[in-house]
View 1 (cartoon, one colour):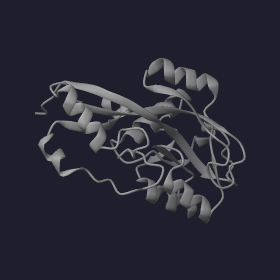
View 2: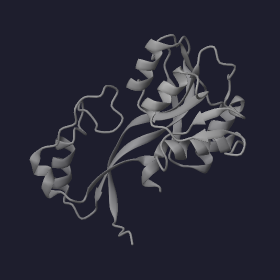
View 3: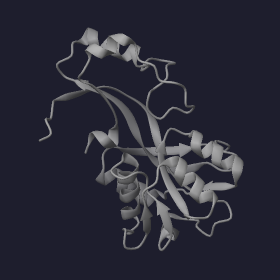
View 4: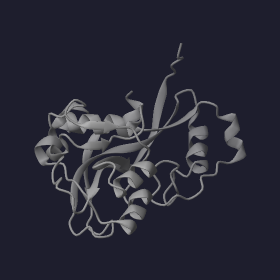
Length: 212
């Protein structure tokens, strides 16, 4: 059996954007156009998979209408480039390294989520928020992309003292100007101080995973 423990949110951080990537010359221009297409929805049981399914459902699409496959971001990017899939979902801070690298190899576009569907998602799932990916975030991106996002948060046991929580935020980089271990814009090494070994109740999740 899974032992559950009470947790508290230390702080929420940046927004991880729900990004839907297609080739620039694709006939796919809207989320509705993903019907009958082969789409990577992220790794199985990942937060990205949950986001992808929720977004598709907001447009009336399910796995009987979309050919869903489970790929990690790197494999999804490669298969999109090779034409093996038509699109892939990626929930991460923008710029996302794997998309930056893909845009160097082939021309890509990001799909927007329309206002009606965004409102539907925010009304159904409280963890979604409006998110804009500014133009020129990726090579060839000439317009802002409207989508939704989820907040990355740091969770810890509610039994930890305030001083311990303060120490954890310093050690993990959750301080102004620091690097977060989740969804970095650039893939810097993540190094935790050896003293973190004593904090066996510290958990790092994105907000969508926290609701599972």
